[in-house]
Length: 412
Image (cartoon, rainbow, N blue to C red):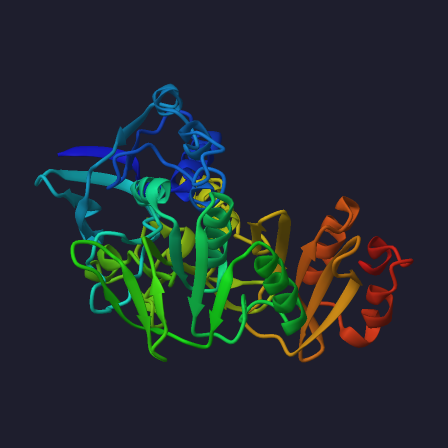
């Protein structure tokens, strides 16, 4: 049985960054990176934006070329599935029956796109977006198609709808929420977004769900619960992901929540000795918010992968990075820092539709997050520092709204 000092399972950004982390602390230890996908590790944000629109090539999607892994003495196993993990024996089993031993192991298996269980969901032309192959399938249909329907009003749904519109398709968004990004932004931001989409010709059908999908040999129509019929050449379901934590569950690792996320400590270790987890699948105890968090976004996977790799290789520190999100919709870019799971009040700095604005989110009087759209670059670090300090509304509320007040002056 072959044995590696480090095994990384997963093909996303957390896996590639874990290689960086390991090699910063251990130049010699043997490393194997195993991915079920037939690609070197890649990032997913371009799949709904620049790469989908044909404005970037695969070289911008791949995080590093194969030569990077060779230069770092990493055995890269793509198109390879791990079917079993045995913590007591420090061993994994591959789909071809091989067994590999490990000293330390990282689970960075991410998630898979959900698909609604509708009649007709198996028709050609009905797609999700999670992989490079998914993106290619959408591109091919978009070349010939004229009418597209997008399910979902969060990050993926709104980004795909914007990109398909920019690609020249007639796009309709269908979502059960009352407004775009309902869970993440106050109503005034949703209204601004909806105005932008409407100006670009996107039809938005809020507060409604689909009943069935129809077509003879391919998708032709989307029938909604209220009887509305939408002609469609293409449907993209942006309705969330399910976590790839089956290996962890079979191995007896501690899981949490309805999605069965993997419980990790501050150093990203799981409940099993020498097994770590990072990215979408990891639920960690966050020091800033004093609660367990799990975040499905690029930057969290990026930061956790690096930290997990370093920790595995002996450079042990707690993971304390503030959660960060970003999204590009048409010509508007958003950045978000913090925890947006619970908030009950917001304050705005700047004016929407003019020079840029920032929304400050509070829960029970303490700052919990910031959304920034077009604000000066000099405000980025103070925004993060204010969130990490969990400043009180009564102490900083007036100054936050006053653009003459330098944000950095509020940090102390």
